[in-house]
Image: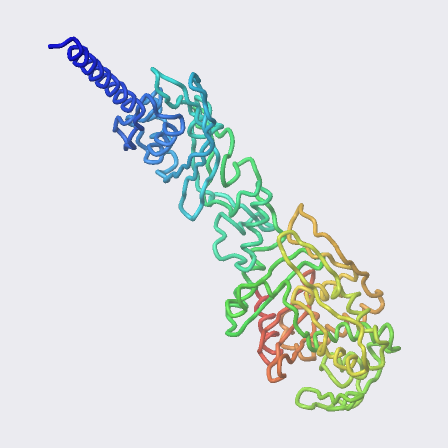
Amino acid sequence: MSPARKRGILIGAALAVVAIVVAAVVLLVREKQAPAASGGPGESTESAYDSPAQVAARFLRQFDTGDLTGAPVDDPAAATAALTATRGALGSAPVKTSLGEVPTTAGDATTTSATFHAAWSFPGDSVWRYEGKLELVRNAGKWVVRWAMSVIHPKLEASQQLAVARASAKPVVADRDGKALVGGDAAGVAPILQGALSKVASGQNGGTGTPATVSVSRVDASGKPVETLFGQATETDKPLVSTLSVASQTAAQKAVDGFQGPAIIVAMKTSGELLAVAQNGAAGNQPKALNGLYSPGSAFKIATATAALQQGGVSADSQVACPGSEQIGTRTLKNENAFDLGTVSLKTAFAASCNTTFGRLAGQLPADGLAKAATQLGLNADFEIPGLATETGKVEPSSSGDEKVEAGIGQGKVQVSPLGAALMAATVATGKPVVPKLWQGLETKVNAGYQAPPAGVLNQVRVMMREVCTTGTAKALKSSGAVFGKTGTAQFGSGADANGWFVGYRGDVAFAVMLEGSNDSKPAVQLAAKFLAG
């Protein structure tokens, strides 16, 4: 073999050896860099080269199942025991976690951390959400979670545990007598206000949303509560207290629920503290009782009488005409069934609800006469009650004689809410401006206040309202005690239908009953009697 051929063979062999070595090195590197497969509990799929994020994600997947067997944690036995105890204490409530932020680590780092979000679900659509934190360390070259009770919840300490209790044991919102309105045994109480009551209560408790059906606390080794972490307050805390009365609310709700058409009742102390806000299903799920504006019909004659007594030169005993019908300006007014009383006292005309009398009186007032009286009775006031959107009414100066006549009998542009009507009755009863309230300890903001009519005027209005309930259109209330009030029937839309009203007070309780489309005030009087009997 020639020397040149021998050199060629040696060079080829050397190159082959180099190729084999390079291939082996590449294969080894690839094996080391291969990512770990995802595995379930008990599967040993972790790799020495798993990142902290991969380790944290795998740990949380097993945390959600409740089985930490084989999980990447430095003390599997302690972790498994603690998580098992926690899930048992929480009634096996399911938990769902999601990985949050994981800082980038240097190649030689030995510790790092990761955040996560946890959501435990309890019966009644209560979900406890919080942010947790995992500490990760290198153990034998691999990243693992460093176990501590704070892994379960960041406030848990070594000797502590979680405990759960049903929130129904105590109300979240209580009425004026300590009875449950939200939470506790409050099912079915004040349905139209449940959303508002719950919202305010959750805001007072840190904005945690709808009051929970359970509470979660951390307790010490003896089981003594250390801190409430979610839901119901501890026994040392007090519920938010409303001015509402379960007894009044139940009576009002029972009265409206017994009526086939849309029915509303609002009741308050004459001091302004709301006692009941009730609507039946036919009235819908929007709080019309508090902010729905309606023509008040003859119930507004309380304001017309107030204006006439101050500005029209009449008294409750003045003799006035009450013909069956009368043309006033371009408007022709008629009494119900065209009844004609001839000449009677103003209080008698008021008790019988003479449209002709009060249309004529209104027509003789200044353009702003009725608006001033309405303002004195709270119908143009504006309040911000925590948790409630309210309207009392809207009564503006009349732009024409015809508008004054229509407004005098509560038609035309005059608008009043059931809340405003109850406020008007409370103002007459107490002789002072009234601020409606829903809460004890949370004040109502007065955006536009008012001053009540003079005492001498209100004394006469009270006499007239009492006459309504003894000899007038609400005499069916004679057996309901000393009730003062005014009936009303107000046409709406095309005029083919009308709402029925009764607005009044008894003792220190003022109230308004409004029935949509009842076409008569008699059913409103009947509902008032049921409410007062309850």
